[in-house]
Length: 151
Image 1 (tube, rainbow, N blue to C red):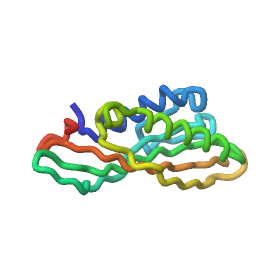
Image 2: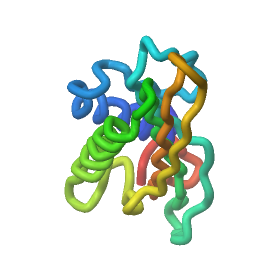
Image 3: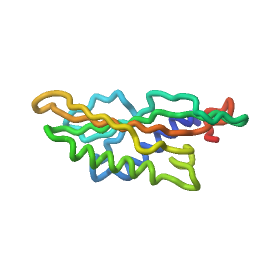
Image 4: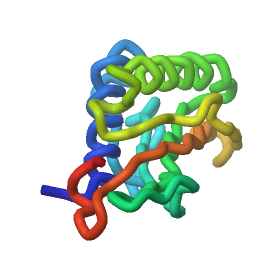
């Protein structure tokens, strides 16, 4: 079994692959270090750069607040419209994965809404591309001493 943080990343990638096929095909990756070229864009990279203790400590578990980033890469001089369509699909995929008050297949207790967002343009000429970063806060709990099982 893997850390709940890794299980969350895998669940998010799976949800996005199922919901963004028309926009990005199979180009959703659980990584932030891929050599993306304009030939393989649009693409989405999912990663978790940080985590902090959550505010609700209990005697039987550890609350955690996970930073979940979804970076959207779109080639071209005017990538904004497609980035907005993809970001809408990401939000729908994550917030609709809810059952009995839990998110992401029961792994998370909540996803803070709305996500923070930032955009940039990089490159020049034919290699120009836009990047949109969606920054989610995912709240989850593990049992003391057992980071592989969601509480």
